[in-house]
Image (cartoon, rainbow over all chains, first blue to last red):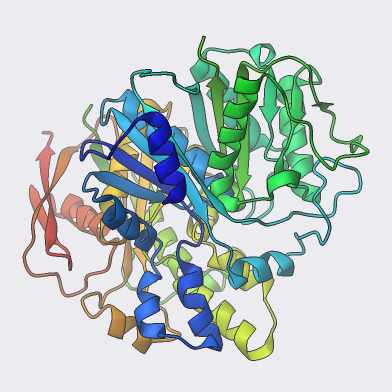
Length: 308
Length: 228
């Protein structure tokens, strides 16, 4: 709610109207509310277990916001909030709403932490995306929300001009080794924006620090951008917030466009030579691609442009 | 832009043993098997040359696997990677996308009683805005066989489980539109995402109207207009 209230205040929305829409991304919803009871920490299992459906998060939001309009929960793993942004932009474009509240929320649970550990995806050190010595990801939790409008309104932070959702159809957790689904998503997003790869000033990668993920994503990005467009990941700073990561990192992109600075990939000391990308850049970013990949082969990419 | 029902299928209750004997289904969950069988029936109406989107609607997702994972963690302190992989809420989507070779837009929607309806609305949105030929919508929910009594005590109005699938395209046999209205008695085999199965049955029976009542007192009223 704190993130939502901040976003709405910045947008000048005093409340949500019933002809607005909400698109909420999450991977485990309110699992931490009942997980502890279930694992034997005491508490009221029956009462807390009512939070079990992922839609329970939305139910709570509706109640808190007094909202009765269209709302839905997207659960496409780590690409969920870029999926939510793409769907919201389509909702606006087709006139189904004039305003959409979009975002992601992730609260860490034992299931998530132990699960990622069991897949040997976690690093006990700070993640180093794209580094030759990268050992895995750092999980984090948080919430990030954006207010989207069909009309530009007063002082917009940016424009969402392109987006796409694809699937690898390859494996339940590992991405396609050459990142083919991710490549398709980015190309389609660029197409929708009417831009060529060389028009892009910066790519904010998914860049988790996972040995396989970074390789696959690197292959996709190289196929599109070669070494002409700077690429970086900020996950070493804020961690991987799973379903919230797309929304959170979209806000990072908007801030980078505002400040005119491309953040470098913190923690990367020696770039992996197999990942042939241009790391870091000096140009003030005005056209940015935000890329995400997720378990289940999901991919989501959006194009953001500065408002002139 | 109208969208049209061009195909439908549902899980018909057959035992899953023969499916489970196939290598790619050895580790599949009940949700995945139900969804796959419903999807295959719907896809009989789809040309393999076309581009397909995929929406999975599920309210409880892989709850059974989630509970099994946590049970194991509590008992032995061991986190089993396969259970974790299958516990993910979009695991059904990942499985179906791989089995069916879907590389277009693929999304999991999870909105309790509205899961099926929101999945259909999302499919219509994709048809209106994406370069795809059709969207497969699959609605699936199952009752967890672990802690089944806990589930039933929480959801006494949700005694059912199953899967339905519909294929939507820009032209076809039955145009439809859905609206929300006040509800009536909830069907005997109700489960949260059963709206998709209700549409599948309506397509097969060439029905012109369906009313799907939900435990929250609302209902979805759908009119189907058949093209001659």
